Picture 1: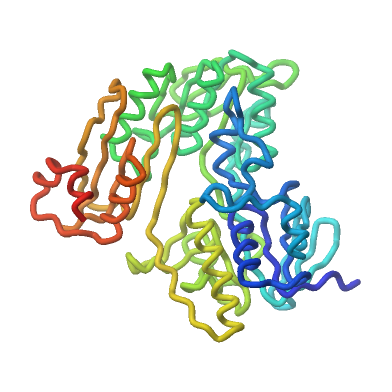
Picture 2: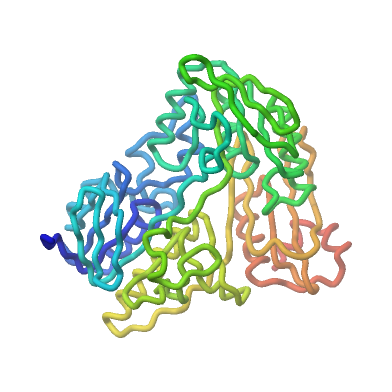
Length: 435
């Protein structure tokens, strides 16, 4: 087999983690020709969260080059030419179909091979599709998903083509909530459908969810809980026109958007690197069981020091921070400098309509709700604390200022003791500002 290109470092994947890793390599003085990024996407690394938010706005929509990394965290914007200026080879529209970790060789769909000394696996997640479950009619036109910029472009085109039509959103998580809001802003008649008893069940308590569901209902979004889409009807052109639900309801639809989760893209490495909890197992420096192979972002199952357990975290904040940690560790190994272990505080957030929430820590134990959670308030501001073994482990805040969000982060990080849960409920946000 003809030998392909060799690089000292290869980043496999072209999402947020890849972009932040490239910036850290540049900061650490990577030499021209040493680093390659191999991405199946057609564009340079960008801030993925923009796709479910600003990209879908009816006016002043976000577009590239506006949201290339690293603007999402207040960093510089890495345009495609930045990579060439740094001598970093950015290989776009290149899908790797085989990875052999023993010979350090990657093979592309086109048959090209690439070898490396150090590999960073930053493959992220793929979206779960209803066709994966054989849902009847799930391959009809205008049943859309959102993961990459290609998906977002299809969604924008469909929104414009069916102006003022009916949209059904399948799923009650981040994507379901953010896209229902975006479709409503685009003057769609929107119905959300999900099987769980309330939205965002992995994080929200029933109390928190009740606020968002009422707020969305007031905005004109219809919410159908406890049922799921079991089939789709299409017209003669193959365009979806109805969604059939398990409870027998049939909803008219011009567009269907599905957000039922993602799967970490680890298939290339099956049987080659240790796995745990659906991801590739790493140490506190994101090195896998294979020396010189690192995994970052969605695919990594890493030691979450604060809670003394292995976790996999699907969030942009961890994608950025794990990337920086892995590159520091790689460069530290070369120079003999020690790097502190990754010590991550879990952080999640979402924005939709005029709302914005942040969550820090761990959502375990009993919960209290504080503040103004009236969905008809002109400026609702409320939160929750999660209390376990007499300590606050998690904190959630809707409508917080930057300082207030910092305060709840500090609560989750320091895990203060709570004498009385009743007192804590009364104090609410004041409790956080005293820490």
